[in-house]
Image (tube, rainbow over all chains, first blue to last red; front, side):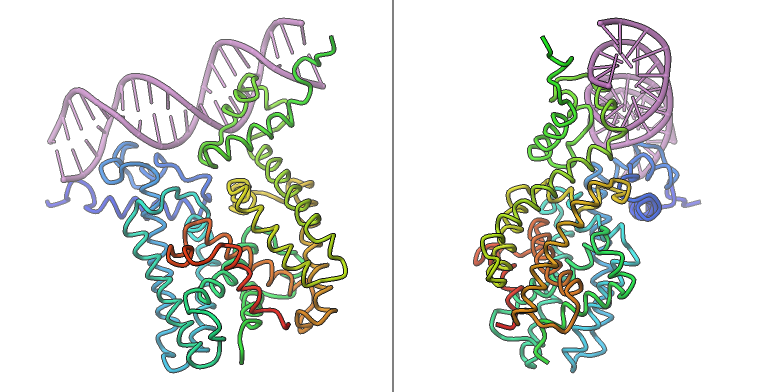
Length: 199
Length: 199
DNA sequence: ACCTGAACACCGTTCAAGT
DNA sequence: ACCTGAACACCGTTCAAGT
């Protein structure tokens, strides 16, 4: 039978196993040997598909960005005629992704991946995601919802940074308990964004 | 002679060695054994002062927060009658700290420290730092520089999140090269903040 | 109280060998 | 082409022993 030696797609199986370990044990518990074991292969099998651990982490991060991109796309596409709604729904999707995939989110943005530039598909999807943000910001500027005092890319980094910062601080336990009792992360992030809006 | 067995303060020597390794090799290169070697003691000596690696990381992070707090204090104290200046100078100091101590900054905020709540002095200094931010925000609200549409602590998380997010994205290489050619991180962060100001 | 050295389990990576 | 098993250097942590 054509059982392709193993289940055929060990590469993706390893990525998936990595995501699962990440979710269960956090970045500290992520080892290549555990990933291999979880995928049911020997500890050296991953080296047929990834040159080293960093490459697997890059693949996991890339997978995360793809999911994030897809989520953002889905959140904003229904509102192509309402930029403000796109912005608000995009933020919701971003925060939701971070909350539902905390450890993937952390590994994507926490510097565990050391030479991101060495992984073209990671660079590709992350810059595509940024492009999506810029488009929404651009539309908001055109509609007079955000000030046109700066080019869209600068404004995009400011807005994205705002959301990203609040989410990151919250995930790292840097937002006070008393504040989190009164508001969800969604609300805190949205509040910050509201400060930047014109209408 | 009272050479106290070693140089007397191995605990701080280990923290210092950790900071140096962090700066030279990044978080990936930080091992207890290397820290011990750099401090000139055997690999098991650190266990006389730290129960485990996480505790050393907590101590390094605490040290980082202390530096950050001191820097913020020094930046704002000369302008106690000018809240806006305090805010702008505080932001500058924050960004400067992140740029000059990139890897310490990352370890403080990147989730490498897993159970922050277990380290009282870490919690203490980080919440004191937040309190400092809240005070400045409060003063800005009173002076009509920031809107009083929300309690100071919520506003503080928004402002801090804004700056922190932009800095984090920049340090992780998520800010496009073309943008970084035109503006410093300082400028990008300040621009985002300016969006939130009333005057 | 503070430090050493041997020991153990675990990890990343390499390589010769097997299908 | 894809995978295994032995091997090596490195790591966190423990513990009995030394001063």
